[in-house]
Image 1 (cartoon, rainbow, N blue to C red):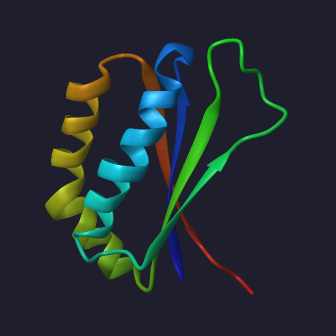
Image 2 (cartoon, rainbow, N blue to C red):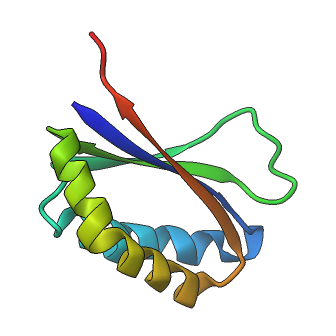
Length: 101
């Protein structure tokens, strides 16, 4: 199992609207690519929230090939839409992880 993790610090002024958008538009758009099986939204705890809360969006996929497909075919456009919608009111970085049991 591969997890594509996107960590995002969100400006306090947009948090309620951003959370709604993430749940009803952004995550469904990513899942509709067919590259991921499911997702989870997490809020980081015990972090400095003076500039806003930090969230992690995790997308699960069965293979690195499916993740690569997402990156090659879909990620640029979806990232562009995020910046068009929210501008500089968030900071994001991504990582990829493999589940080890």
